[in-house]
Image 1 (cartoon, rainbow, N blue to C red):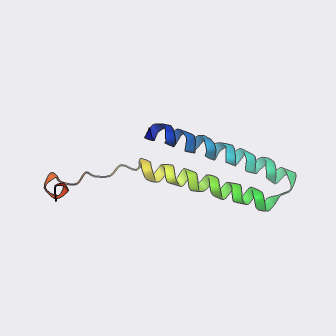
Image 2: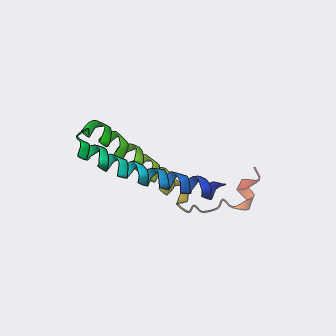
Length: 63
């Protein structure tokens, strides 16, 4: 399930980036900037979720 969500987020980020470029060329800079910010937030979310973390020791996990 998590892999599917990460894939959808990445695809949406790529589509938003492409849409931002298209909208910027059409002359709407504010909307293009907002689309780029949304894409960057999605990419950052994926990066945060994919960063490996150390597992807690078993003795502290049981508490």
